[in-house]
Structures are given as structure tokens and as C-alpha cells.
Length: 139
Image (tube, rainbow, N blue to C red; front, side, top):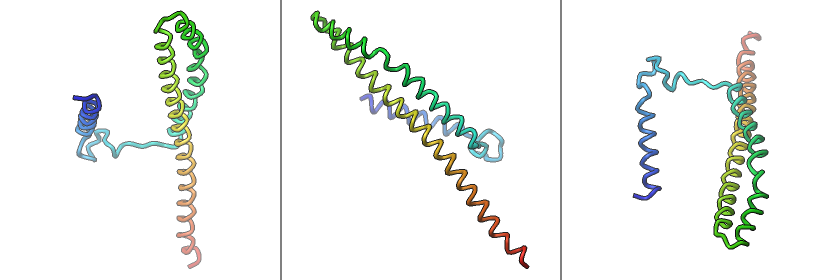
């Protein structure tokens, strides 16, 4: 079985286990999906954590790059294959770190936009509701 097939099977089993653990009786008080509530404050807090992780990781993830380049070049120059392996490892790390940074920025931006959109939507609903009840004051 290939890795992709095995990974797909593991994911489907994981989802099935999670879905099977949710109570089917929505009134049962078992913490099912109907009990889930997220506020704008929750979304802001998660977005801020993602932004904090972004800044922390951006500062600390790449400090070894120059030293790795120097070491791998020196090892290559001395005829050791470890130098090119070290460079490959660094290149892989850099790519993964950049992906994580991108994901953190995306999470922060998306949640910030969600909070703003939700606030704007609430304002529209309040305005529409106020306008729908204005007629009762003129009768």
C-alpha cells in the first residue's frame, strides 16, 4: 500500500471515529454540534495567537541559514557529501517554515476579516429590523 493510500485510509477512519462519537440526540446535552458557539472575541483571540506565532517564528526560524550555508560549502569543499545533505535539509526546513508562516498569516487575516464581516452583517440586521418595526409607530 502506498503512503498516499495509507494516509487516506487513516484520515477516513479518524473522521469516522470523530463523527461516531457525536451524540445523535440534539437535546441530549452531550456537547454535540448544537452546543457549539464562537464569539467575535474568540475569533480575535485565535487570530491574535496566529499573528503572535507568525512574528515569533519569523524572527527565530531562519537564524541558522548563513551558518548552514557556510558549513555546507566548507564540507563540500573538503569532499564530504554531508555538505550537500546539510544544504538539502536547510532548504527543506526553509520551505516548511515559509509554509507555516504563510498559514499563520492566512489564519490571522481570515479571522480578522470574519470578525469584521460579522460585525457589518449584524449592523445590517439591526438596521433592517429597526426599519421593519418603524411602521408600527406611524399607525
